Length: 275
Length: 105
Image 1 (cartoon, helix red, strand yellow):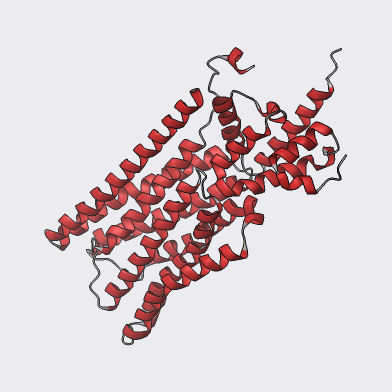
Image 2 (cartoon, helix red, strand yellow):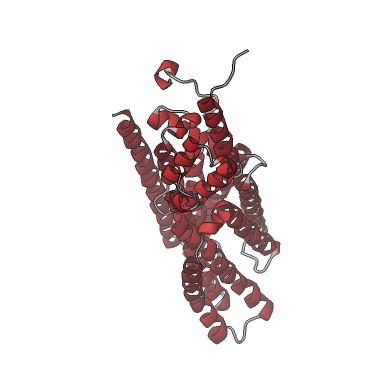
């Protein structure tokens, strides 16, 4: 009976988290769509205002989780690497904000790209360390399936680069294409994680990570297109997907915080009942 | 001086093995498993010797299919004590593949 109540409470909490996530996604998406209706300047302002809380929340949540796991264990190392990734992307967003405020436009490529691109190996390493204790359960079938999906996702940006970037600066194109390639590589362990943790509570994070990476790939492809035809500005509709990326990741990390609460200080309500 | 019974020694060995296997992943994982056992089944880690299904269920709920590797890790830690009847029964119960690993009595 008590077990059923606990399961019910957990399901309710999980369902509430999903509702808040859905609301946040709708709110941020609508905010940027409506801002774009008022013009580029409004879109830029709203976009910059949205980026600050979503990136900051990811950094704070990842540091909380990293602190909880400490330095020991594979997952401890994994969350430290994730925090580094979150901090690097936070710095990149702030550099981007600085250029927007100083120059009044998005500078590409800039120092921010170095930080964004530097974040990819850390996120990849996070996934590797997270999956390490379960590595023997990873089958070749899982790896091939994940690689196949990842390659499919990489086709549109590669197609765009090969057909539409003939007269665009090569270094710009190389940096712009590095993002979808990085996303496609990240998608491989993310899909493996979903398959591996199927039916488990930790799968929520992995599902969200997978969705976020798909969004990021689409956004990076959109950014690539907008860079080629020089139509990108801060607050461009593709920024909705970039913002969602941070939102989805933050909710995944938050779910992990609730899953791995520190219970050591919790007093047992009825010690006698346990014996 | 108090002397530990055979059952208590086996429970202690089991607890150390489970804790070591979970600590390899991370301290909060051990805490989450211990808390879940306590809240959902009103038992502690040593009690899993009598109820391996509780531990299996908790790990399954947390890691889904990935729990099989954690179970294998617990198995590895307990391997040298597998000749003890209750430990062997625990291993067989938590990981049915174990039944093929040991000769029948």
